[in-house]
Length: 374
Image (cartoon, rainbow, N blue to C red; front, side, top):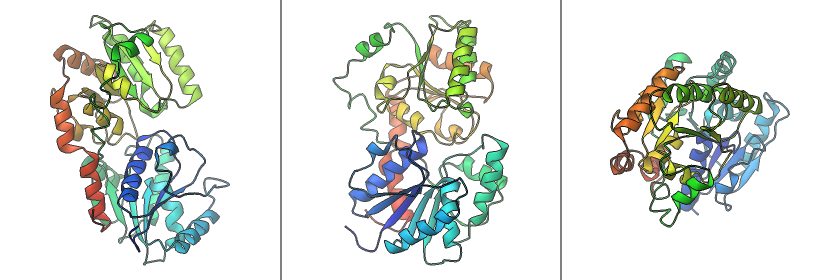
């Protein structure tokens, strides 16, 4: 263990999502190098907790309400007791609750890591506007793409601070066909009722309105009029029950029951990347720099992404995939059609991922940011 370099990571919880996967990746690496991280959570959502190294301590602070301000003093007492001088917060809410108790403290260094861009609602925008008001000049803000930095600085009137842009990265060895060398992709296709000729468009994302699943269903209906054989749309993930019900009604209404598949949540989604022809995200808010898209690219899978957040910084059109307009089913369908017709897929996409978005490169940037060395 490296002394006097303890760092606390604060996050709402371990729900299934990109920000949560990011935190787990970073914390596991800090622990591996002996930097003795501690994780602080603000809810009992532990869907991804099993991916965190069990040797890493996790302290849970449950709130009585969203604005249970009293909890901030408990968090501070814990941080002070453990002699922590660096606090790394995931997204504005965790930063707000933690920073309040340290508002006049100049001895603890704070890092705010931002993982969403366009707010899904006006209410979220107002709340974020409040959360960002506790940011001070000596704090560090980490953006995960340039588009996010420009949007948030303008939208929320952020003060001048220490800032950095660090792209997300993934473990390209884990997300590879080589890692699944003995995996039977044909059997997986058959298990879900797909034959070898079926074209599969996979979407790995939470089932929430801002993720734009409705537009994906509309786009598939349009694509079926333009492309043969008719592709299948595979949704991997869980989320809001009412929204899921709405989606299933839309599938029936469009006559797509045999072509839209709700797979639920999977802790290991690599098999879906391996059997698919296109990865897609049809989000209209929150999406910034999708880890799921990077995982798919590591499998050589082309990505069709709506042009929000850092999608344009991730995609080289016609090479690694295509961009489409958010909230535009016709544009999404056209991007899918273009990828399928050009048969964009393979080693070139994986090589691009390895050159630009690996976990190793990302982690080295974070080590330098917090003043550590490998």
